[in-house]
Length: 94
View 1 (spheres, rainbow, N blue to C red):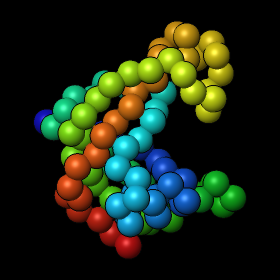
View 2: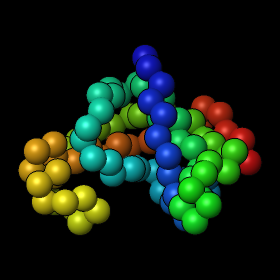
View 3: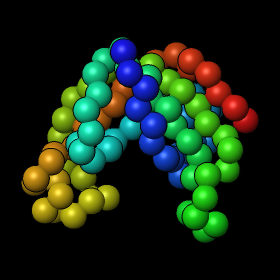
């Protein structure tokens, strides 16, 4: 089991904290497995800094896809996408 740290924008962070968003779609440019911990640090894109808030979620499901618009077609073609299902909250700081 490993911990994978990623930044997450404020609007998405709030949805994860509330439980409305229990998945994450990322560029498939890192290794992770079911059972690993996804350590999401809230990012303020205006200030270009972390807010200090975070949440850790256990990865319970992984699948890949090549259909998404957040990354360039070349990046998706090279790496594909990683869709991460998140389970119970392990730890958080609000």
